[in-house]
Length: 255
Image (cartoon, rainbow, N blue to C red; front, side):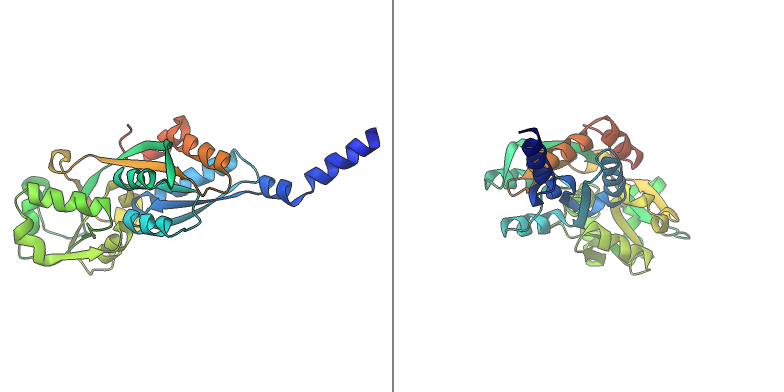
């Protein structure tokens, strides 16, 4: 009997299901503004869970929503706002109980080294200067930070003056690429991305938070999650003490 029980345990431990549990991969769709922070969050989570790995995919939150609606095999969705996770819940692609606000995004004007635009003193009106020919930002149709950027320009009364100079990226990552490659003279970007080595060489000027709606960044475990317990554990980590410390390090506000 004892030998039989031992053999049964051995077979269980070496079964395909046990192997998957010991070597689980979590597929996370993360808003592009999260890249530096999410990479560190994934490393820290994995360090505490040997055998588990986090596969990150970065892009625009609206694009991810469309992919999730079409059956993309993601386990967790980390959005740049709360609107898209709310739609996930409304369409029963995730549960309200599995959604958490984990960070508050912040917007900056990024300027390359040598730029003479005096945003520090003049605010967003400095972007209307003739020397600022192209302004990069994410497409408001799919990126919450793009909507925040447009709202800030409108609130500052300069949108009409600069709308023909706007260069729209498919995500904040592409908007940042426009800025660093010289395809734009300024950019409206998440503060979190300016910790990147290329962007840190420029100037980052905070956009007054009164000029744009609060950017509540929200995560949700998806109904299709292959390992719901692992997915929930990851979201708990992101919103827990260690996760919050990492997010604060990259300039996010904490809810």
